[in-house]
Figure 1 (cartoon, each protein chain N blue to C red):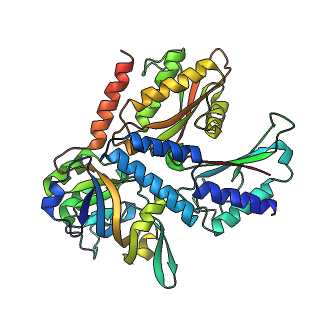
Figure 2: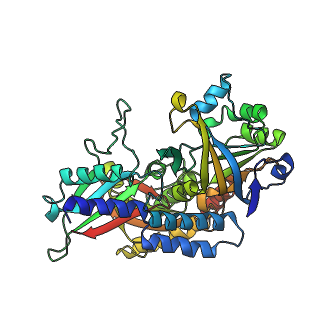
Figure 3: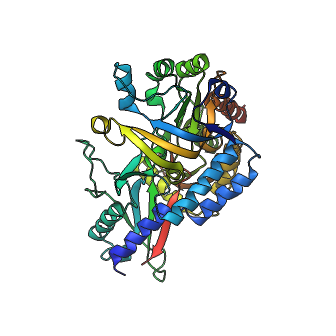
Length: 189
Length: 280
């Protein structure tokens, strides 16, 4: 398992290869549909994503004793952000995108050009994902977007995932899809 | 203990604890995957997740799914809709269930997970009058339900004809199409034949069977084994990122059909195959 610590510098991100298991420590920010739309429409965000991480996640967060506590924080399906992600990568300087199911060729190209990777989190593993969030630093757009779509700032320790798209232009999803399809056809030839 | 509390305990345990046979199958699969592979890491994470959820008594997956109860018809009065609804309400309050029930017309949330037809309750006839009456619950999330499919044979795009070879082709096609979406490794419930509605019903019912269970029909038992082997040789792996473990089990049933129809229905269950039975 490769340990990644915030800030994520370009050199170490570019050295990651599709298939590498990673463990992420430091601050990561959540952002999904409304967040991406807002950014694409020219909205201002106060978060510095330079050398940072964006997590496609709609967490369940509750306030206990005046502090935010993460109850569940699994990844959400990333394909919905395809139209916005290349521009977000170009403008924000983000290095790691965490989600589920992978993204399209234009996003892969932006990752190659600007030096970023896509990390697949383990779908459904709500309990371990939540447990790796050690503290909630804060939240933006809570009133505007609602709790599930707000931009949460999580301090995580040992958040696990697999590099599924690397900055060399390799997508593990594409590779597995084409090899499994080939194998499927072989059964019937 | 009141019946409401018994059903509440059933929901709590189903939500926070994976069935033993599924967890053991994941452990076995993890040992089989190559050292240092992403497949091994993902399966290890799933096992850690299950241990943590059981210890903390929290949902093991954030999508607590559609609650589907299978109730012995002798319990029709005791385990009625009112009792089940009350248990679901309490389970939601206690955080065993996410607010997971949306009105399909206006999009509002039923914050207590109770509405017309929710939870789903099926009453079944007991196989023997001497058996102890049971209630079984399955919780199936949206990510897996979205991956269930129905084929109609012949299927020219697949080149699948009206024979068992065609049936097998449909099932393996479903496995290929599910990769990256339904959280693998999964379990397939399959119905060959029937009409469209019974196809889905019977396919889903196969998910109640234990992983060690084989069909009593030797032809179907053979098919279950052969499809499991073929699916796991596709290399799709946990979460679709490659590996030896794509499926944990395949359970097939058949129903008669009319001459004009030939459906093959596949109910896909993700690794979080939550099912549990209690005697009441």
